[in-house]
Length: 411
Image (tube, rainbow, N blue to C red):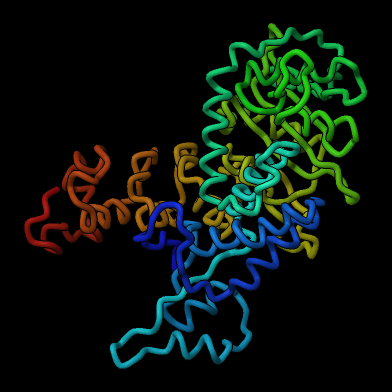
């Protein structure tokens, strides 16, 4: 199966780029479906179908190049006949190659995450002049505004401290590194507790536009959702009432679903707290499904191989995943997790060598075959230090020294 590769970007940074994505209608349909499920208003739905869709088609990095009919069949995973119009595009021409085509996974985790971030940002601008000119704001401008907003939030965070009374917290679970509490959406001290969480965590959960009234801004939508019962909020705190992880679960008719799991400054929680969050997921049991926040911190829901229901399975740490294909799918967007494997599977090491050779330095051990291939294919200065210093005996394949494979190669 072809691997994702960023498309060239010769146009201005704020222009929508042309790119022949063969499943563009399916991408738009998925964006529309998610917007409907969230309950977005007509203006937001229109903006997503226009601006976010055009950005995804032209600029989303994680697309798969299609150079043959076999590539298309591999990436779709179906045995259905290839549409004739697509077969014509992929068929080699007199120049020897077909037209450049691409496939974009409509359910790609990083695409969904970018969509969520933008919807959250634009919702926080309701009632402002930005809402009135929404359809004139392209996706690149919205992303820039979101980044600027977070920079301003960081510079003002020292002014937003609010004391915690603990009155709006309810103990849920004791974990190895503290206690996980749930915010009580019906308590009068909810917003104060949210502001306290945001101050220490440096994220937007309790970032209110008015620090005196604790209303408006990002905090308003989270507080209102918690008060309405649409969102359940949790915090992992240690001695001294110090927050370390913030968790939000969306309430759906079929149960709870992971909304966000954030460490400080909206980063992934550090490895120290992975066991705490894992215990929480197994206890509270939100719907079993893939989520970038979970996978980014190394927590994976692996479905049961024999179950027809994809939500049947178990939450586990990434090093415990049993299915090799599933592991590669998770790791392809989370190379930083490679450092957690005591003995990384060889297939994972080959994946790193193929699409992220710079991440080989994270490996605790490296397969001799992968090491040899890296020495053959990578420039010397691109090799991890461990490979540059590897002794000659470790640079052989079945007893054949690499210097016989490529003249001048040194071990």
